[in-house]
Length: 149
Image 1 (cartoon, rainbow, N blue to C red):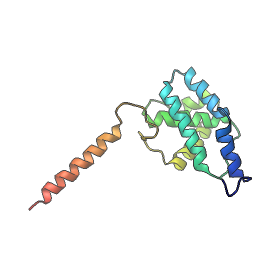
Image 2: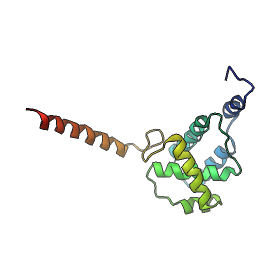
Image 3: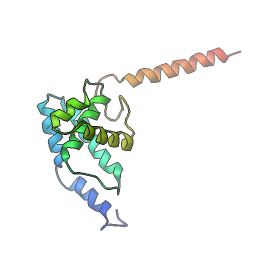
């Protein structure tokens, strides 16, 4: 940014950090709170949105309807946290199409390499991925014992 202070990238970062919440964050916060979503999940969704915009770098962000991004963030965070949710249910709640939620959800997942129980966005006390790590470590120990002469 120091090398190109007048670039579109510098303008995007200024938009990210120079103001309060953007339209997506406001809508996301209002809708998720209205649905009784815990504050931790709302915070995780806002964190995902910030990280997504940073990860885009100088790529153009398609922003026709903030509802599509808010719905996709809501849906993705619920999926990451293993909450019961359907794409159609989220689409109806935000007043958009199922396809719009799907497309923006895929954008989030691909750009941020999001996975189930992703440590960056999982808010539960016990992450199920920890059990996988423990199982892999145990398997490694068993294999080492098996290979001993």
